[in-house]
Length: 300
Image (tube, rainbow, N blue to C red; front, side):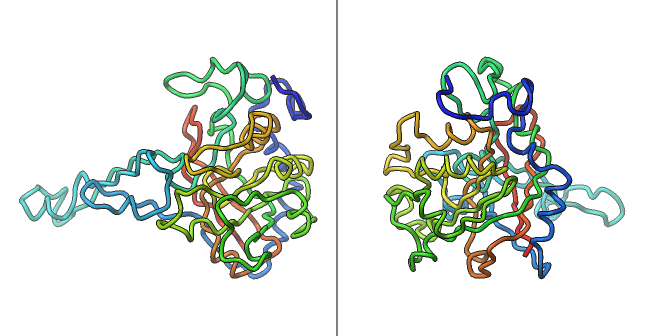
């Protein structure tokens, strides 16, 4: 059961998009004014997959998660071995890619990804999450996200390359860095933790404290993004130490309907140093998906 202020029922009893409903045409047009130079940065990790190489293990990921697989069903070697061309001199390459996004690459979590008790966000029954996907609150409900992004470069503010593994970002620190968080914004939290790959990446992870999640929810953000793997912090077992009451996924996804964007690459954005920018993200329309790989963009 939800036991704290939340967004259940706020956007109607059938709502499956949460605070993305705040991205009205007027809010989106206002967000576009945050672009000043037209420079575009990708905020995603590379997807490296190969069935015959260690390439997938060279990108930050959580231990034990199925890594991406990328292989060719038709390649140049097939034609060299005598495969028949499509037409006179016409050949093609054809590949296949399998990505399990949670914990292995830059992705967005759907509102059906995590819940407490017997109900998803907004009271949808958790039994609607089936073996073939979720029939409520799936990632296909997102569409596209165009919003004002607000960068919180926490280690940069503290004079560090990256935060320590046990560091939890409190609400007061977010407010100290940038109190100007508006309805419909997407706060982008840099911890610098991807820089620790592979040496200490699995020793834990820094992330938001519970009061910081509530601080952002109170400001009606459209989504929350970070370069760590779980928005909140993780211990050396890759688990959250917080109680269910203070779990960041439950505070944001389940109670407030705030989508989460995880495992971003924010180093170039931090070097550019904008206070705000245009944040653009579009998940794949995976019907019933608990999430999707994405390539978020920052338009400076």
